[in-house]
Image 1 (cartoon, rainbow over the protein chains, first blue to last red):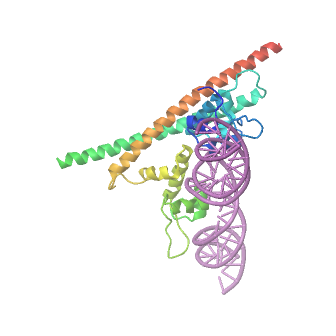
Image 2 (cartoon, each protein chain N blue to C red):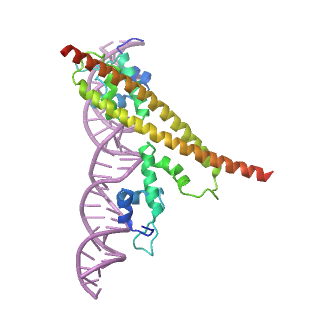
Image 3 (cartoon, rainbow over the protein chains, first blue to last red):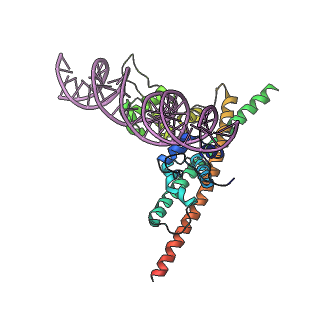
Length: 131
Length: 131
DNA sequence: TTTAAACATTACGTTAACGTCATGTTGAGA
DNA sequence: TCTCAACATGACGTTAACGTAATGTTTAAA
């Protein structure tokens, strides 16, 4: 499988719907598929990868807007970017937010664990009593 | 500050709007404030705590529906619950999901960090050249 | 008792991230 | 060349989690 596929193959391989692809194009999350004149759009393997990466980041709780801030880092070669300073600031912002999220989730995890153990003990006692 | 406050005090102390309180009541996230006949509602300190806890959990990315699954654990005394087994299952589910989220975020954090360092090096080189 | 701020209720509006028609166009195979 | 599945485009619909405006009722204070 090389490049130059139509939207059907693209969506099948990326696990999304055409609607999603067009929506992402409309908000600039992925580049619009090339077309000859005014016909159908053609996409490449990179679009597949891009869609998969977007999906990953979504599962981490990032919004499409946040993803737009960072998605190019995964696909643009490191040379020749213009507003590097700005991107760097955004990245640091995301890093801080990520750390906060992780911290909060770990706290939550601890609490969950405690509740679970409490419940388990309670149920075990009931077991004992029924003997 | 003891119990028995009206919705104004409640929302001020909890950092939410009246609309939010009524919405949460409507979906069963918080118990409806007591009222005498058909007048105004009165709330207690526990409602304040409950609203704050809900806000914390929201920041962790839990939906209101997920929060409804676990919120009572923070406020119901451990004795006399009925479907403990079911709650326990839900808790274990949440624990697994939480672990996944944490793992994904840590991965993302690592990637972010790498990108940041790459950008920093690039900018430093530019600094060097300008000397 | 009166009054104005606080409250209650209803209902329509909003944002994100698409889903789901409806209708018209393209293009690969027979 | 013809045809039918695949594609394009536009528009209205959907869910979550509330915001906001309109209108009517309470209640604490003067």
